[in-house]
Length: 343
Image 1: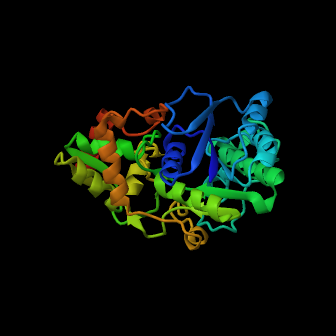
Image 2 (image 1 turned 30 degrees about the vertical axis):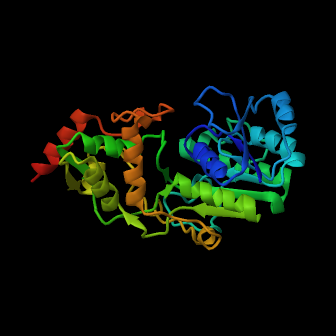
Image 3 (image 1 turned 90 degrees about the horizontal axis):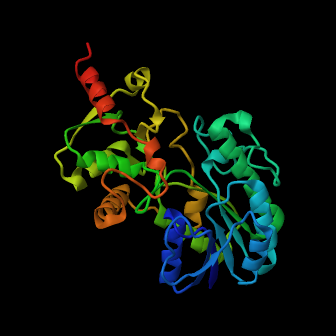
C-alpha cells in the first residue's frame, strides 16, 4: 500500500512512518524539513501546506491509498489540503483530539457526545473567546468538518485521541515524570494513587490508523486506553522502578494541592481533578481493532529511549514544550515540606 503522512518526523508521525515501513508500505512524508530528520526509507517531499502551489506539487507524487494528517490545526488549511489531495488519495485520516467535545474534561465522553461548531473554512483566530482549550477544540472540530466536506463521509476517518505517550514524546509529560524520578529523593505525587488514567501509546494509535487505512474504517473514533486500564500509581511506580534512583513517592491530597495553587495538567503532568478527563469511552475503536499495551511497558520503553540519547534526562524535548511541564525543584520542596508538616 501507498501512504502519505502529513508531518512524519515527530512523535506520532514518526511512529506511523516506522510502523508502515516495517509493514512494507511505500511511505511519502510532506513537511517543511525544519523540525526533525526524515525517517530512512521514506520519500520526503518538502513544502508548506499554506502554499497552494506546494499542495498541487505534492498531489503529483500520488496516488496513495490513504493520507494521514498528524499536524492539521487550522480548518482553512486542512480544507485546502484535503480538497487538493482528494483526487490523489483513497482515504483521508485526520488526527483530531478529544478537545473537540464541548464536555471535555468535565464530563464523561463517548462517540456521540456533542462537539464544538466551527466552519470548515475558519481561520486560526476562530474561537478566540473560548480560551485556549476551547479554541483548540473548536479549530480541530472545524478541521474534521473540512475533511468530510472534501472527501465525503465514506472516505473520511477521524481519530480523536486523548493523551498520547511513548518514546519520542516531545510535550514533556511522561518524560518529566521519568526525569524527576531519576533525580531521587522524595517525589510529590497527586493522590489518590488508585485514580484511573487512560493514556495511549503512540504506537497503538499508529497501528489503529494504519488499520483504518487498510480496512477502510470511516467515521470518528475516540482513541484512549480502556477506562480502568491503569492508575496513577502504575505510572509513578513504574517511573520509580525503571529509573532505580531510590525515589520515594509522597502522595498528597488533591484538594490540598489545588489550594496551594498547583497547576493541574502542567506543573504535575497528567493530573487533573475534572470528572471526565479520564472517562473517555473508546469502545467503538476497540471493537474496530484498537490495541492498548500496558502503561508500564510504555513507561519502561520511553525511559529506554531517553537513556539511548533520545532526549536528555533533564526532559529537554524536540519541540520545546517541556518548559511548560513539571514543578520547579524549589517549589516542589516547599510543597513537600508543607504537606509533611501540615496540622
